[in-house]
Image 1 (spheres, rainbow, N blue to C red):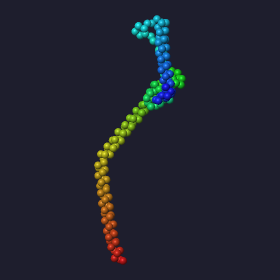
Image 2 (spheres, rainbow, N blue to C red):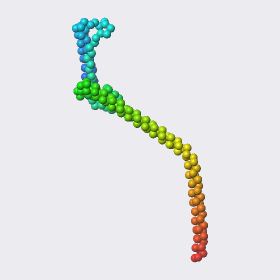
Image 3 (cartoon, rainbow, N blue to C red):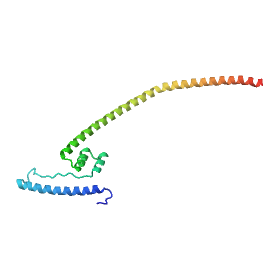
Image 4 (tube, rainbow, N blue to C red):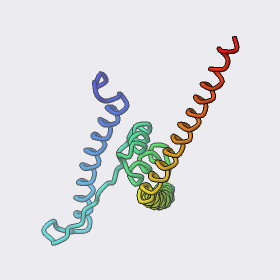
Length: 177
């Protein structure tokens, strides 16, 4: 048990303790039920025979319970009582803490849902903007192409002018020498 490959020592020890306590609680419950029936004269044959049940809370390693809760594997309603029971909280304190935490989680879930809704609206608007940009894109491309053609024509005209000036200015220079 202490050299288990998959469970920590504390988990194995608590598991053994919980199993032992659960078995003892079951036996004590049976003895108390028989004593109750003997004292009050109730038979087992009745439709709804009285039973006394000893309620026990299993112990758990607090760090492991916290890790399970943080990973989302254990809900608040299970994790909080286990941890608070381990530190000696009363049942009333545990119930109040669970109720408070559940309300907080509900509020957090509401905020998260509103955030998701906001992001979805934002994505829808972005998609509409892109679609509008694509619709205006052909006219924009045509205008850009016309501008590019005009730029090319201007550059060609400037190049021809520069070439003429160079021919005219360059021919007179060699004859002067």
